[in-house]
Length: 394
Length: 141
Image (spheres, each protein chain N blue to C red):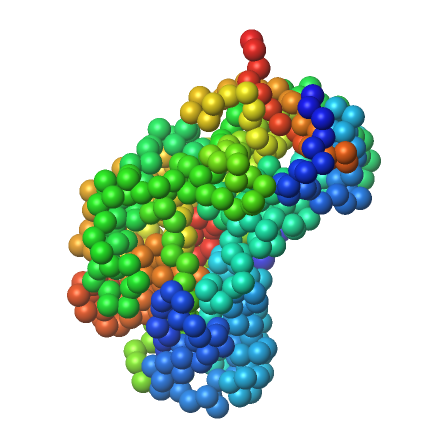
């Protein structure tokens, strides 16, 4: 099959501003209210006004978050272009990629990309059980939901991957504790993080099972909040208030029979084949003209502790089955060779569909992170177990 | 097999035109999946065409009902009221001898005794008048 070369998007666009609302449980504020805080903060950070904004890309939306059209109406925006993904956490990079393409195509000049969520505003839980509309999808939920057998919730899909991982590669649930323990250490240095009390490996091992082999401390937080970044052309970003954070590389989100949201092709869950996965040099590195060894810090979707392991292997930071050894001994902690999720992640800062991670990446590259600043951070990657990625640099 | 329980309170599968032959098969104690008449691929979940070669020449074929455990989880959290009395309950992914994998519950085995690769065979669980679920139990070999 002939594949057209991708438009070279290296350094054509940049993040010009980043902002967020407060994150917390039971904030008793609506998603549009929280969205207003994040959007205003991001515009102010960029030195842009409301009238400069002509594009919006939203991930999530009803029933947990605010939708793009109502955000625009209620907040009095005048947009040339808006777009939205379905209520799912995996579209963060996709939204930023769309925004960059919209800017490159001249469809908009300043695009806010964001999610605003209020889990505590729901009448019944939406992440499992009768309120989980995914379980009723034709052909099943995207995390393997199959309610007739009691299979429900995204975490259960992650538990299926974790068990398969342990069986295939011999790692243990105790090895996996390195992920939530590291991110909790980072959250302790982040005044905006929701969970800042110290956590040990033993604390993790003593926490109750939710869906074994995963325990409570393998699960991310469920909370309220909003976070936003503003995408403009690189040229325009250079004239704005803060130094640009360039989008140096992008890799889209794949789909198909070989894909399961929490596992790379060949992993062997649901209908995936069983094969040896070889990351090779992933397209995002080719566009950005860098290699994994050039990455100063890695951020990754961590709704469940197993997911960063899968991401590390999917992008070639280590080979399949090596993530337990790779993440042991502090390598992914601040001061280690590859710090990950220095905000504390979804596991300990808060679950803003990883828009909080994008905000943190921008602040790290500008040197604004205080006690948790990565020394000389120049190039940071966003890369996920489900295969999409962005490379940001100063 | 036990009698269908009129007070069955667990979620039931949504029957569609595509998957009706699968559920009709289970009701008749037959495990069937779609097979492509052109390339012989057998797959799940049901599709309007062969996901490998896009042929629309599809037959429903009887399977042997045996397989092995590929992965499994144990629910300790209550999500559905109907499953509360079963906590902690297992959900397993069984790889059928013909290749496709099904999510299911393992019966006749302690949760702590479930192992990857364990050989299992189908048990037809008539949960309501209309619905029979495909569950699996360890295969005596």
